Amino acid sequence: MKTLPIAWPLRAGGLALLLTVALAAHALDRGTFLERHAFVVGGVGQDEVAQLEQERGNYTLKLVTADRATTAYLADVRVLIRDAGQKVVFDRVLSGPWLLIDLPPGRYDIDASFQGQAQRSSATITGRQRQDINLMFNARG
Image 1 (cartoon, rainbow, N blue to C red):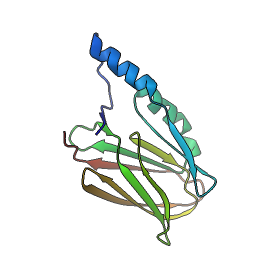
Image 2 (image 1 turned 90 degrees about the vertical axis):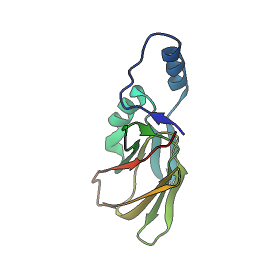
Image 3 (image 1 turned 60 degrees about the vertical axis):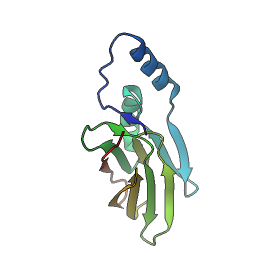
């Protein structure tokens, strides 16, 4: 399980160096689904969050996963998105807490699971309308 605090209170010393090196090694995960629609997964560290915020306008849906108690971002959440006909259009375990996805117009059911917990949401995309969904889980150490 990866939990990533929204604000990083880095301190001097070995731990700060270790976190910096680990975050620098992570990269945004980009791909396509339904042959031509883009998605990007990330949000590990402040630089990635800033980059994703800049790219937000290119995607119709932003989904963010976090711990309910601490608000720490969560990775390793499985996200399954089905269209109105219940066809799976996206199914992936997220490598970071943010998913930006360019869903075509339509209605979608979004199921997410983390450590045996399930969350369900829905989105209706019309034109270039943008929607934000935050899914909160109870992370267990």
